[in-house]
Image (cartoon, rainbow, N blue to C red; front, side, top):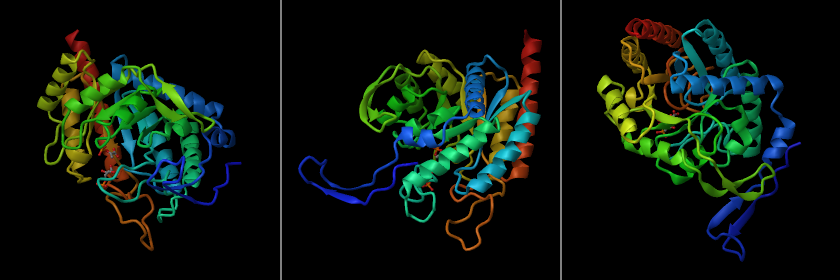
Length: 367
Ligand SMILES: O=C[C@H](O)[C@H](O)COP(=O)(O)O
Ligand SMILES: C=C(OP(=O)(O)O)C(=O)O
């Protein structure tokens, strides 16, 4: 059983407290959650295969293209599972050319305020039952991993990985946090490849700095599996890479952007492989534009560009987005950023698979 939520306590500058105004809620310990929802043998196999695959593709040891695909956020477990089932089948069909990883994004960074994701607000109504969110998210991720579909997520709260990292094959540090020391330290200890988004204003340098920082060992304060405050010492993560996601009015998925990023990486003594996000600043948050962006990325891959190792797409079952709290919500439609619909996603992934095949042929002919 998870620890029961205790009554709220208001902390207001009382002796021994940290000051300021905090309402504290006892959270279940990672150990408690994992005892209730342990990593099954099938899920463990799926995660270790997923990490191996993403590492090999990102390092160029496997000539397939990584495709990180899925909803902007998961707000409905059943819709998330329905999407995972279809994506898993498509991933199997395209497995010769694409390494498909599903976006299971459960913490949302907001530009100002808004719904912060299934982990923190699983009832979607501001009731913020984090213990229930942890249980919901871990159950969902276990089920997806057990299907053999590798999972991608954005690491936002520094405390989340101790509850969930054993289920994740690829992680992201987002555009809003890529300059944060805390997130770079966090990435330095994570046991999976981590994509560093370019900054929200478009700067790629901060992502390169983040890779260099996360590759180094760090020591910082954190929480262990028993929920104790501990000093965490990391060894450094050698598998971090840039994700080009564009900036306001400044997409960065064109050949010149890829060349410039590879130049920056090489100048920093880093490998030049990178991932391009077809959404966010690269699509101007227009879900229909993602297919246009993906086509341009595919053309570069088909022409033989080997620095492009992966693509990110935001897709769900139904195109577009809806507001939270509708009386009749649309099943499988995003409540955060607008997403490509399923049919468009299938078409784009088939095109990207063809581009990866073409690159294989071009590269072989050049040998
Ligand atoms: O990817 C999702 C959003 O772009 C991100 O969470 C910011 O969303 P917001 O600008 O609507 O807050
Ligand atoms: C928030 C996201 O991206 P970015 O950090 O690039 O805005 C995301 O991928 O969901």
